[in-house]
Structures are given as structure tokens and as C-alpha cells.
Image (tube, rainbow, N blue to C red; front, side):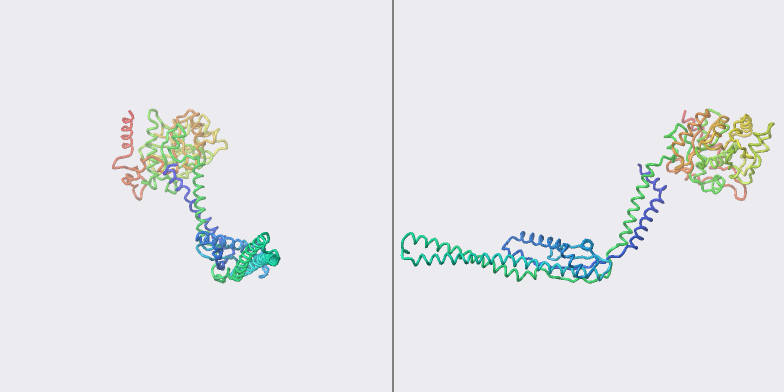
Length: 558
């Protein structure tokens, strides 16, 4: 996708880029406002390090031991025994799992502090939970440490008593040997020496056990002071959730992302005809030009806004139509479209106006015997009599008396007249060919507005004229509809003069329109207080200018 295509998509779907973020942001705001506010209370617990008592002198090992101890304690705070006791003491209707969902426990980096954070809808309850959790955990931790120390002390005391008994036994045996009558014999002396060695070994073991027992007593005296509360939790003033502003901004951002995705998807799935380039790419028909959105309320742009881009676009179509008909005479033209609402009637009316302003005698015929609209384009027209009166007349009717004049010189209108119940049969009558030939004698160009190609009326009428103009709508007519309409026209055997794209973006058309938008400031407006006259350009009448441009263009082609 090129930058130009992206800009077109944005201009076409700009409302999606506005509406989606607005809806998403509003939804996020309303949902956030309806959510129950949560307050966060924080308790700080200090963990006094005891790793150095192990005798390690490695700072890295001590730091690693501190980190491991802090992580272990943070996990133990959220253990089920601590949670259950906290709930029991506060008498809360909570489960341990629900309370754990309210908790956030983590050691503070580069400190010996553990932060216990509790979220709750009640500020007071959040503070009570945090304080009670800290109290219960410190008590349980102290009890566990004392219990573990007592058990180890009992085992050590039993080992000390056993060692003391071994010393007493060895000492008794040594005394017995020393008091014997043969104490001075070599054999007895050897036994005495062995017992003395055993006594010294037992004594060393006893001394080591006593030192260990003394250290355990010292550690036991410090157990209760390893954890302490540094800062009690207090009821918070401001809630921490929901974050309305952040949620709203995230909703807007998400809506914008969704909108961009929808626009890209719409551009990918869009198979409509948008400009003349699509006509050239999809069909073999000539692209006569694109018409931008009209400014006039009644639809006749050249009369109300003679300097508008749409008016210049119609003049460009008039010139292109002249080039498209080089080599053969085109006196009668059918104007149709692939589907209703493509603006064929408006195009036929505007084209008739610019052709008449160009100095040609033009007759616009409303052959849409299903939904006629030509008489609504021009002021003062009546649809009481018209084409059907001529077609159903037994004798050759006076067409000139049925042609209604307009405010544009050289432009006359033949309306439909009474609508028949069988439009196709009426148009397929031999009399229709005679009427078309009669009208061609009365004018230089006869434009016949027909229904869309979905019905057989335009194909019937196309066989009676010199060429067919197909009108599509940019961004509305699908490519399959355009291709099918062109194929239907080509099968009728009537020359396809070209395709006009309504409501197109001029950036998708030729740069010719940009130059027109600059030079059209020289176009003289119609005289005030009177009917519009033939438009002049640079002091020259348009017919002479078109003829000169056509000759120059033909020379360039040759």
C-alpha cells in the first residue's frame, strides 16, 4: 500500500479512527468508575542478619545468605499457617486463598527490609490485615526458632552426658590399673597410657560440646530480636485501583489500534471502483474522468458553481468524450449505470449543460420509465407529457412541441411522460428507433438517460444509439458490477464511449485537475440577475477552444 492509498483510506474512514478510540476510552472510563476502589496499606519488617555468626568471612557469601533469607521469609509470610491465624484473630469471613490474593510481599532491594502490602476495599481493614500479618508471622517465627533450638539443645546435652560418662569410665579404669601391685609392669603401663589418651580425647570432645552449647544459648537469646516491625501500617487516604486516567488512556490507545486494524482490513477487503485508474485496470473501456462531490443542492453544478472542481471535471469529460468519438459520428448517447444511486441522471444533466454551454444543440431525453428524475433537475419542467406519448402515438407526433426549454440556451428536455406498466416493451417498439432518429435531426447531441444495466432497458435502447456512457460511483460500485456492466454493453454491439466515476477523489485522477483548480479562476461567472450564459475562458468561447485543443491533440497523436 502506497502513502497515497493510505491517505485515501484515512480520509475515507476517518470517522472510524475517531469513533473507536472514543468508544473504547469511554468504556474504559465508565468501567473504571464503576469498579470498587482498592486501598493499599504497607508494613515494613526488618530482618537482622545472623549469617556472620557462622564464622564465614566472605562478604559475597554473607550477602547471598541475606538475600536468600529475605526471599525465604517473604514466602513464609504468605504460608497457610500465618494466613489462617491472621484470619482467625481478626474474625474475617475470608479464606487463606482469598487473603493471599490481597497480599504482595517482597524484600526491598539493597536493604534488610521486607514490605508487606495488603489491598482491600476498606482502608482500615487493609491496615489491620498488614499489622496483624506482621505480628502473627514474627510470633510464629520466634516460636519455630525457639522450638528448633530447644530440640537441638536437648540432643547436644544428651551427647555431653554421654561424653562425660565415657570420661568417668575411662578415669575409673585408669585408677584401678594405677593401684594394682603389678602397675609397674610393661603390660600394665601400656594400658595406662592408652586410657590416658582416651581420657584426653573425651575431655577435648566434651569441651567442644560445651562451647557449642554455650553458642546455642547465645543464639537462642537473640532469636526473638531477628525480626522487628520498623513501620506500622496506617489506613491509606488514596486508593491505588482502579487507575481511571491510565485505564482511559489505555482504552483510547487500544481503540486506536483496533481502528487502524479495521481501516487496514476495510482497505484490503474493499473491492469497489474508486477512480479512473481502476476503470483502466479492470476493463478495456475508456476512462473519461472522475467527478468529485458536487456542491450544488439541485445537482446542476455548472449553473450554480461554474468555477468548482466538479464543473471543471464535467468540462474535462466533455473534452475527453470528443476525443473518444474521433473517427465516427456520435449524435445519440445512452447514459446508464451498473446500479441505482450511481448518479447517472445527475451526470446526464450536468453533461448536457456543459455541452450546451460549449455551443452544441443538446436534447436530454429521460428514458427511465421506471424512476424518472430528469424533470426534477431543472426548474419549471412538467412530466405530464413526454416520450411515452410519442411512442404510443399512432401517427408521427410533433416532437418539437414536446421538447421543453430550460434556462440554458440550446438545451431542451424530453421527459418520460406517463409511466407505462411494461417499460421494456415500450422501449423495444419500432417507434423508438424513429424517435431517436428524429431527435438526432433536431440536435447535435442527444443524451438518453436510461435505467441501470440490471434491467434490459439500457441494452434495448443502446442498440438504437451511437454510443453508451457508463456512470459509476467511487467507493460504492463494486468491481464485479463494473466488469459485468461493461460486458453487457459490449454484447449489445453499441460502441462503449467510456466510463465516468462519480464522487471520486481528485488525487486519484490525473494531475490535470490540479491545473484546472488553478486556472479556473479565469472563468467568468454567469451574469447576475439573469440566466447563465455560455461560459467563456480567457475571452474565448469554449467551442473554439475545444476545437483548437482537439486539433492540437490529434496532431500530437499523429
